[in-house]
Length: 117
Image (cartoon, rainbow, N blue to C red; front, side, top):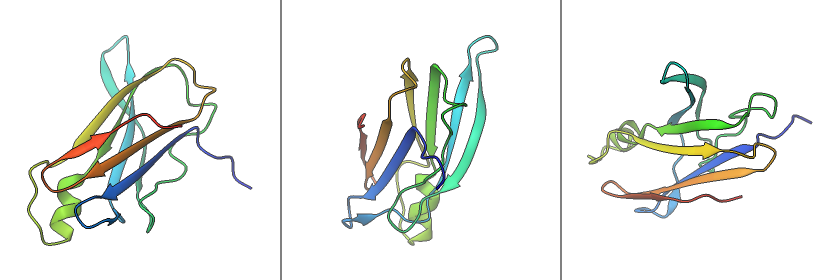
């Protein structure tokens, strides 16, 4: 059995009440010395709106991270215009031994997120 990621996400299309399947996303960590974002992984949400395997426990160290969701491309694929071309959720990890869940609830003109577990 593969090790589960300490960081998970779940994207929901709140306008239609369905998971946001086939949305591209990427995970980045801030290099605090150079002050630039380093891409750690890329993925696409599955039929349930989840993207397993974002990062492994060894790579998940304290620091500032961001998840970038390609929301504009998702809505374009559904033939619908949207206001946000992408959504970036930036967060700080100080206790990487914990589990973190970053859901994204979105419509074409709004989004919200929170820290789950």
